[in-house]
Image 1: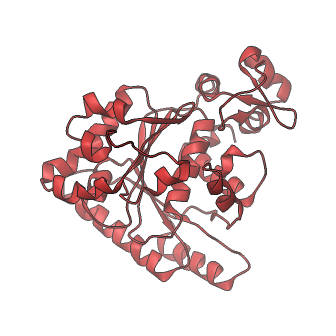
Image 2: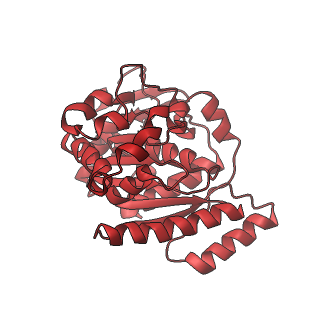
Length: 319
């Protein structure tokens, strides 16, 4: 057993037991003891690669997928959702890359990971992904990487003016990541409808649209849905799966309850049934350049995102 580890994002043996509905004794006997990590609070951590090995043997599907986060309205919890889901997915064994497509670099800021002056970003790599994608990667944790962003990504609206480039730019970068062993790509889009979003939609297996009670975020949702249909029609692509995720839910306010009810009535087939409750833990984690899943502390937000990740990645196999 390892005494310590630099890894922030590890599943505990307790969580692995809950997921698979197996006792702690069964879990420990099934894992290589020398690879378990001693964590604070007398807990044992399971490295991401070991979780994947164990869950793969027990029927969990690690097929490659691209998940795009989009809403034309900012401030809806898009980046918080993207990075929270990415880190939880890593804990469940998915080798994950976050592609920050927003020139404001919110996801990059969240982990305090910035490209150096000579480091390539998406704007530099999309034309030559086979040679440049792996050079652009920044490691955050075991099985967790990022292609960070900078203001230069704002040039994509000029660089991707050709429709063929729009269709293939993100897709080709994701394919290169797949060829290099990644299971999951999380794309954090800017709150706009530029070529970065168009290209991301073309690559998406799943589009997650975070919304909250703000009427403008609902309008942003409607725009994403209509534009996604238009983009897929234009490029003759199948529609990606749509997931609407209600964030910043505060059950103490009537506005949250009413907004969620309206969404459920209008978009029942897309809306995830459990909203993400508001929590101060999000801002506390951000202050440490990490997500809520780096801490063993319980919180509403952690519980809610965990439910969504299990739904999203088909981890309810054992339930």
